[in-house]
Image 1 (tube, helix red, strand yellow):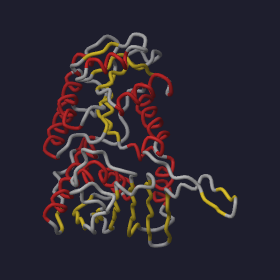
Image 2 (cartoon, one colour; image 1 turned 180 degrees about the vertical axis):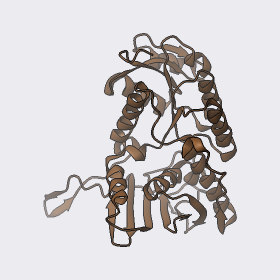
Image 3 (tube, one colour; image 1 turned 90 degrees about the horizontal axis):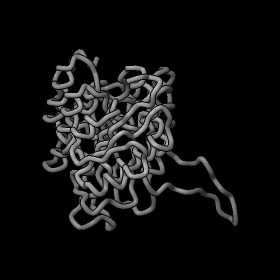
Image 4 (cartoon, helix red, strand yellow; image 1 turned 30 degrees about the vertical axis):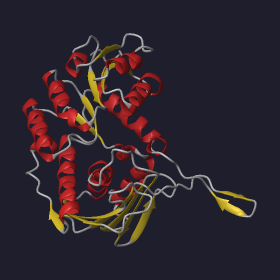
Length: 339
């Protein structure tokens, strides 16, 4: 590509997430344009492309990647479709931003990792957008200074107003706690070695048969513990909070107290109701960083290794949920490409 020209992006998947990325690229961030879109729903793809000059619509991801003016790929299709799309992108040697999960399971993630290694260079950034959230970035920066001493415990809370109708008990781990899995690995700089899932009585607000909430304990190779309260039918708001407890102090993010009001004998504020509101800026910053690094010819951010590690931990978590007890996480040796 000519680095003075906008980065031409093929967006794969035009559902809620993909359409939002199309809007973000077209209207919010600079240095890029949507050159093509693909979706199994031809009408939806055409509708998304209709208002973007020069954007072509496709039902086949490979055709979108081969479209004129495409320099990079953003994958926002459902997780089970990611492996095929990633391998197609590798055939064109195109840079990729792939929404999480990299793939739904560790075996397919390993296949993607082997294919990227065969290229001899990184091509993929995985969309763990919390690494671009201002509060998480500040917490990571503080921990990296060493001022608080060695991290001992990380407490995480992840609450949603209500779960989608298709949500299953295992998806609380694979779709929701996956974010805390990556945040734990990134914030602490540790790999997760074992998972235990505890199940309190199901909330009356949860759909019948859904094990909600859950309490997940992650053990790390650095000797720290990370726990996650996942409650996807709390009913009152969307909350993501984290507190790290270190040898010489603690630090907490996610209280949401940017604005506190005092009036009529009461004090308080508001609680966000959706992930797209809470992390809107993080998504903008994530895509902007990917575009900027791609235009420089670099690949930064979460790697295929990070996507594989998260998949392996979530698989262990689902086994712990279904069978009880503590389940160890087995990872292959980390390849040199990701060190």
